[in-house]
Length: 359
Image (tube, rainbow, N blue to C red; front, top):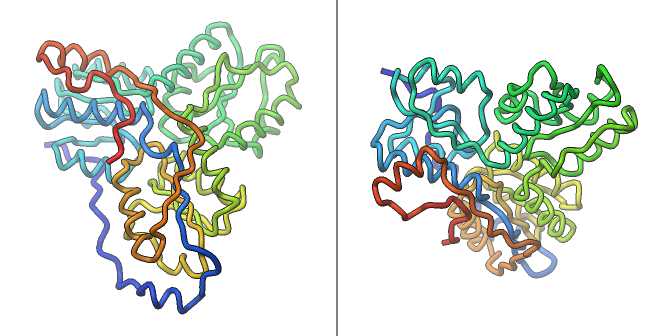
């Protein structure tokens, strides 16, 4: 029997919290307490599509359903799906022959697809369509014999999948500090691509430095950093200068969540912290704090944000102002392998994956 490679438990109950009165006594607050709540925040269309794909696969095929890597980078989501019968594995060779395996939203390399085929696995590809777009760009420019400079975090699943499309053509650039190390065969045939969940500002700084070295460096046909990553960073940039504290809900392995903390600090927040759950919030963070900014990464269900807001309300931050910088209504069709099954079963309840109503 295969043992799940990823086993995540819910967090333990924390130590006794200091009361609101104790916190107020430690450092009085100047001004009215309030929360600035970022919008957009939370689930993007690609994440929702991937999570729904696992839920629907469990519903129609029954457990166990295997998932290569975490379907999305969120502790709560993975744990919840495990409870429903999903088994998360690191590689396809951990999946019994002939079983069903779902590829995560971050995408996989052709070698992973081939490995699954060789083991006779049934597959559902839940790769975010925006990641698939970057894969296709890599294939296209490799075919034209370009050197491809892939800006991203070495070791991240998305970067591994993209670089696997054309490993002989792709160099991974982790950030501005690595630009000096880049070598290319022909400076006239170089293009940059990027991981979809990076800091917009840092990515463009890397591109600026690359263009100083390679003036004819080509840009990708369209933005590689996804709309959701960009929108969440724009929202927190607007909030940060007004915030004494910014709380980002998201997991440690979520690149876009970690970037939100960095962006908040860079744009003026006096302090910023990332938490998976409300019970990880340290009430000492509230000392002397009037305005708290709150946002969440693109793989975070809204229920976790609401838990944080309830905790904040207990400490006097009951006034919530939503700061809206964009409206998101993008929807992606569910993976084609799953759509066929749902159609045959007459299930039209979730033909599309997109932002779920906030509740």
